[in-house]
Length: 136
Image (tube, rainbow, N blue to C red):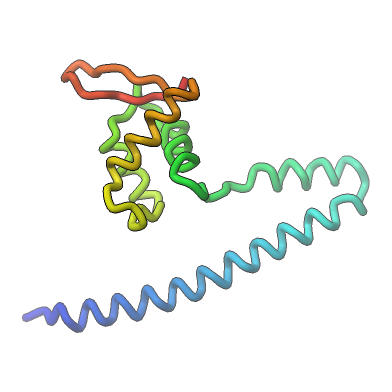
């Protein structure tokens, strides 16, 4: 059986377009519900209000900037540190759009250097002489 990759690509593009429309609608609805809960929280008893606010604070937020995304990847890493290439792979796997960067690895490395200067990340050398980054 021969696979017509042109057909597969076309079908995949149509599916992706549909998923993106649904994703946008879901994200809009999530924002609306979060706003409603924040507006309603002051109207309920203190214990319930506190529970709602804790709940809202724990909703995972998608990182908006490369810096936030890199910090998130380093926080979620249970290893003894990550190389810049490993960070890029995890960002891509998590769905962070690196397409806006002409040199994604360079942008990640520059971000890591800025985080080092701010004292949020430290850099070390691995046993195979690779550069490893870890949160402080």
